[in-house]
Image (cartoon, rainbow, N blue to C red; front, side, top):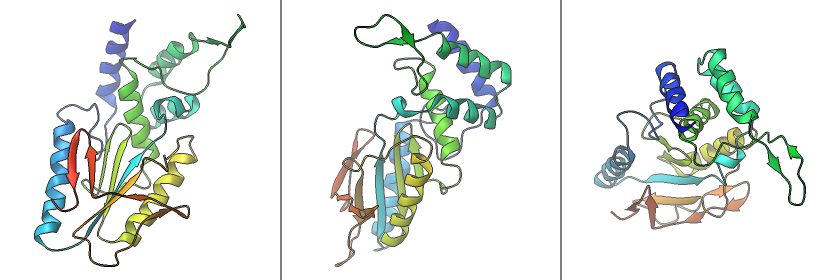
Length: 219
């Protein structure tokens, strides 16, 4: 089954074109590219003595929250032929779950398969579609699977963009983690303030570990 999923993934990749902001699980892109792009942007604003506002968005149990119907819809919007949509549907419909103390299986209608070779690509494809209306050009928006960075020249704008992302994702079943999403300001001037999400203050950080690499507001 694992080999078959690799075959399906290879065929899907031939027809699905990822957005430029997606660095996760894509050919010729890696964590190094995403980290480098963010560091270059930060350095540019440090050199120019200008503020850069960044929000590192965390999604709660991202793979577990993807609605299956949304997955099929995103596949079709991405140009996947119906026969391959049905192939992936069959992979999911042949798997059921049993509640504790019961033997009868029930149908699961949400979540990607954990540990599946196909799931990372499917998730990246879903994120491309769900964020189509709200993402900006790279590096102002960068995605690596469920790690999202939103950048702007003003606190007000990055706050507005964060709310737009929250709305776009949460109306489709995803959920932005209020406790793990963090805000950072490069070259902060006195009184720059904080960022809020639905009235709740986002944690402000002087440094953040992005894709395993620590980035700092002061360089």
